[in-house]
Length: 385
Ligand code: PLP
Image 1 (cartoon, rainbow, N blue to C red):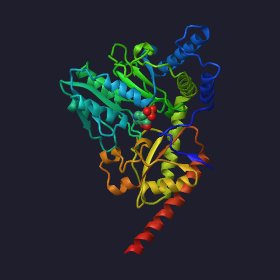
Image 2: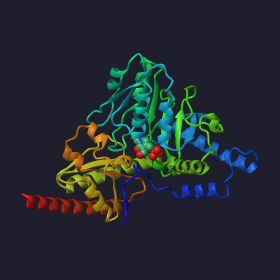
Image 3: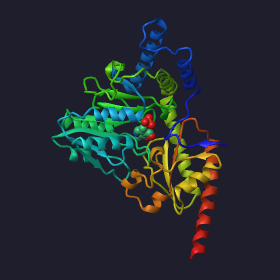
Image 4: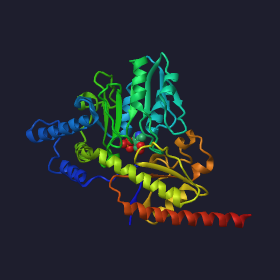
């Protein structure tokens, strides 16, 4: 049996998504900017998908921009502020590298970026933001859900509080791990930019969405043919748009059911791990997102456990997929966890498609491998002494 428990890294596209992608590449391969009927039909379909995504967020379809993924959406949002007179930016130390690396660029262009340390549960609080807010703060950029530990920040509450004090501060939310994993509504108009990725919601890779509130300045990253109202030049990624659109179409009507299912699975997995394997520490907070469970196994190196599980068909992660080659995750560092806790951390990330027997199988394999690695490590230590 194979059990894929790395859904924060990417999800398996739905069959409907693959069919729609194939359709866009075969029968409907036309350029949506062309003016004959077949191309216009493709363009209409893109607009329908745009409307659907807008509906799920509670915004207007003209506020939805298709991009190449979460990374491009985040870059576009933050770099839209590059000419701002207000040179102070607030973000957190636990953001995704797409945000952190773009912030470095902003610093090089003369901005002062303040990186807040998350609370013990991994979240950023309204109070922290309000205390850091200055006259010259132009941007607050925060993730709604942390991709490594699943902690949640109440971004809507923070945005409301910020706008109440300074209505001209731009708020960007990285919602890559939050979209379709919790409810997000933009009706209240306090969020200016919001980034989404297709491959985290059973869509294809290389497609994303940037919500940009009407009237908020958006600077295009690319120059060219002026597609997407000039905001994103380049022939449109019809296959990607069909794919993300179909993923949302299948997922959204069952949003509550899926969230509940993942929450139950997470609780089940967590209780079995904690009760059946000694010396574990759950890093994810109790009120974390429904699909991410980060647990540390004492006396074990996460990477060794990861590869031993892989050999038996269980796929997990030691940190975020993008940063797994670095020695310690910047998120675990920001939480100031002891070295041995960081060493043994494993991220299990779930999907609504997982079955109970798959989780049971994964737990049995996990128990066996933790025990085996621990006994070898004790054996090794004994020999060296
Ligand atoms: N933000 C978060 C929180 C993520 O988890 C990821 C991907 O891992 C990204 C941004 C980047 O998204 P993409 O892979 O679509 O560029």
